Amino acid sequence: MSEEQDDRPDDTSDRRDVTTMIPPWLPRAYLLAAAVVAGVVVSFWALQKLQSLITVVVVSLFLAFAIEPAVNWLAARGWRRAPATGLVFVLVLVVLVGFVWTMGELVVDQVSTLVDNAPQYAGNLVDWVNSTFNQDLSGDDLTRWATEASSSLQSYSLGLAGDVWGIGTTALGVLFQSLGVLLFTYYFAADGPRFRHAVCSVLPPARQRHVLRAWDIAVEKTGGYLYSRALLALCSTLAHYAAMRVLGIPAAFALALWVGVVSQFIPTVGTYLAGALPVIVALAQNPRTALWILGFIVLYQQFENYVLQPRITATTLDMHPAVAFGAVLGGAALFGATGALLAIPVTATGQAFIGAYIRRYDVELPPEQPERQRRERKSLKDRVKSVKLPGRSGK
Image 1: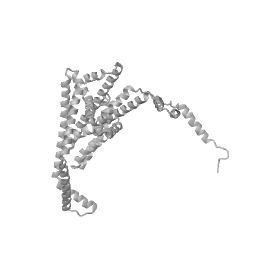
Image 2: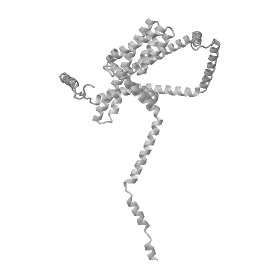
Image 3: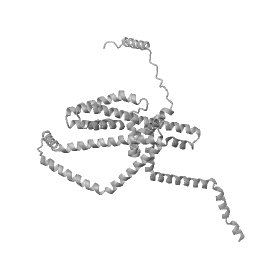
Image 4: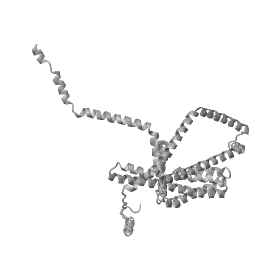
């Protein structure tokens, strides 16, 4: 009986061997991996919940970069930063409200003109269709189509009115986000030096210099780029207003303001979008006037590209139109409307960082061949061609 007990394996020793085979760092590694995974999950969850707040803060930061040069200019002349920021805010809001009000009046005037002249336009349209496509339409057919379109529009409006709660909630959210942007922008601009001091106080001295330099570059280039665009928009507005007044185009100031703002703050395609509206308005009155204003828009665009823009953007930052357009498309694809809004300031800041931190070298082109050697080689080739090889002359 004792021999059978001696032959059985010792379970305690096996468990002890297995325990000694597990490295002591493995449980800690499992715990660390679990903690990292949990931290990543919680971080993504927090980012999703705080996405709107992060968007508001980022937009406010770049808007503060845009207005801080003006605030610094006023502060250097004895203004306190809080009143200086308030004054800049009031000026920007006045400009925005004036632009929206002017464009609203333009839309109302054009819609009123369209409604008043609708019977004449309808008759001209019927005559054109009959003469072009050999049809026999009448005003009754057009009235029937208009009635069907009106009923469809009415049903769509009723469906849209049924979702008034969702529309009101969205509008309220946009209002709160706008107020948040204004509040954060004011504090970032008014307390800019204090905010930079608070950020740099947690960094070592070597890092502080780089952060302050990057911050100054962002403020200078972002504000400078936007101010240069605003100055170009002012020049464009004045020039197009004078041309439209001479040509007798209605709503000249509103159309000129549209051309100036859209052509400067929407890259590449903004020029065509801005010029299309005054051409359409002029075309409704006289095709010859439309051709004149189209020619003026094209000539002014060339004058701006080759004369005004190099002089105005020489001290700020000039951005290639293709780069700006690609930045807007990329920003819109990544972050929607907010990304499209921030694309140009972010790209301008990044371009400034590249120019400040990356060293550039002169491109060494191969030396040109001396003129004498070129003539000698040419004469040698001519002599070789003139030599008649034996057996190849004649037929």
